[in-house]
Image: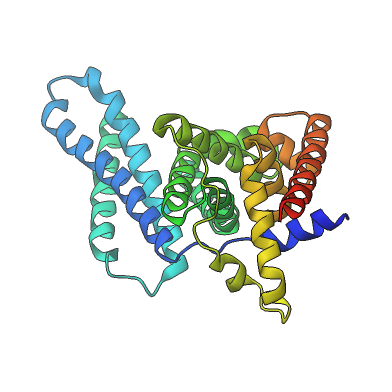
Length: 107
Length: 179
């Protein structure tokens, strides 16, 4: 290893991300969940009349459910930060309930 | 039931990816962009995009590590960052405390200036050479990983790294001559 490489090794050290970054990421994931839930709620009002539109909300269930699942898993890393957990869990529960209903109807 | 199990397993895998590589992506973003604020944005966007395409990436990776794929996302987003905002990397990293925070040896004071010059030299390199050095030295990636992240062949990556080091060496030598 040359001198410059040794210097690079010393200068380019890994940088610890700020603790708030995981919170931000969780928020962004929960927005994804929220958007999917909104789409589902909107669809609920129209779905009975037009079954041809069932495909897109079904995809929203998948996206919303997936984002919610990852959110829970990311969150376990910071169990001490529970301040938003209740609201998000409620949202995930409602998404799951609606998802179950949609699946039932699609069968 | 299988679908649920698969989703749970996929989420667990993504969480692992996030935990394992958060520091890598953030380090790359910070050295690439030069300030913490935008590095946070870039890191967040990288993982959101990774999340959207995770299932497919995992399927297509055939068990290979996903770090180069993650870094490739960050690399593309960083390129857009400069293109969209007509920005150039900052010549000096925002926070020289990076050095004092992470080096706790007694010779810190003597070496600090030297290391700052190295970082300044790295920031003056062309994007591709700078990226290759960041991946090699800050993230500890090998040639093959860097090649995958940058979308180059192994041979081209080896040459890229070699030229980056030579250019930096010449640049630092010139700096010393000018002083």
